[in-house]
Image 1: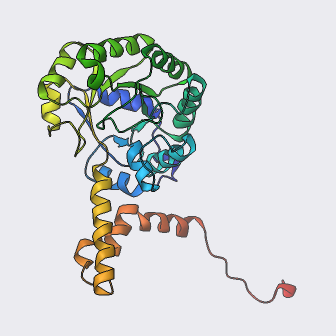
Image 2 (image 1 turned 90 degrees about the vertical axis):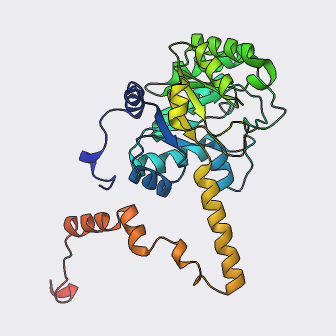
Length: 307
């Protein structure tokens, strides 16, 4: 139903709904969806929670994933995804956009925009995708202070601390940082860019009872694993952060090449949603019917001076 009908809106805060999903025994699957239309399509496919990637949002704006987007940029994306789908959304909070006060501002802004959860990473700016080389790590105590600040600012937002330490500090460093972040108030841990099944299994074994997030990005350092495989390794959540952007960008690339080559879109019709399919996805007729039932047209009679 359209989001404008108040009776159909979720009553529980998004963070509480996210926690409830994690209380179930099965792994929580979250595909990337940083646009309203993507959120609707993911929901239509049966997903119960979504992920919003900073890399995907940056690329959509024509920018690299180097920490250049702002809290307001991301909040705009959150509002449309949460509004369109009403699903709990986990949002990439990068490094928190600054230090402790900036992190607190981020938490309040994201929660007010409708986010259910956020993850915060222990890199220094300019931050990089976790699967690239030469990442610069923040001091673990400084990152712990950010986590504590986020905890103090949140009402219901679920807090996930990401550590990129495995690449430079090894498994011992990553585990030590994760434990420090949990002590500071994190609800869960995201060990980024683990490169083998054995690393995923070891990290989970050394963090018993802790909710863990796995990242299944393409063209990175992590081999392909299914959600079921991550669950068997001890992970509670898995994201496919940029997959939808990669597919959509390739589709747009092929469309523009076809127009340039063929002088029109006639050879791409079978790659498109029809108008009827698009309207079904966005609920066009549901909104249209609301307007016609709520606003009755009054036809003026005669001239104004005669009334």
